[in-house]
Length: 268
Image (cartoon, rainbow, N blue to C red; front, side, top):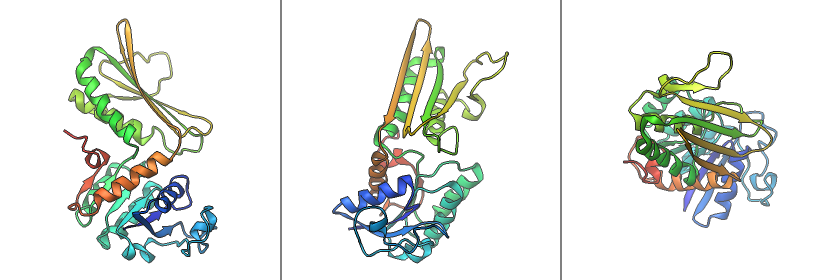
């Protein structure tokens, strides 16, 4: 029985992770964590999420439940996830982190913390999306430099960061396949009179509208033809299932910072 503590328990993703745990006969909820002052802290997790009373209240501090967990799953934000990673590392409890918006300094700290307890850091935990990362890199190698590459991502209007972490990871995978520096080649949207495409650039366009869960398209534009690779998420449940797959894989791994490509055996 895999015991999982969920941070961001009342959020869009955290609530779906809890639902997936409740439905899984081989998983058990070890704790539900929300921010200090959240209206649902102190209330029964199952009752507030519509699953019926389960006898476990929402808490406002991961330290209150981390010792009873085999793994922590965190879908909050970069700052909160980093704080939770420190707590998990101190308790030597593995952690699966699905937040985005980490700076380079944040990622460096996560790598240091992962020396104490293994962690999975993944901007997108769906199996299909992670296959897309691999396919985008493979297609880039097949087509070569003659094709222009644009990434278009669409998300709901409440998403705070842009571009999405998944779009950035797509760009990084494509740049690596070309043997180039993504930070140098990335071009975020275009505006003005002198915006001609540079040789080798990777364009990234962000759209925020309605309640779109998440859509990502990579456009490979050549002379006389265009190839498009698209992934569309119709619900958050696939991300929740991916998080449980990552948690099961992570428990028992050696300390280190992993991603979903490691979890799914897609590297190489």
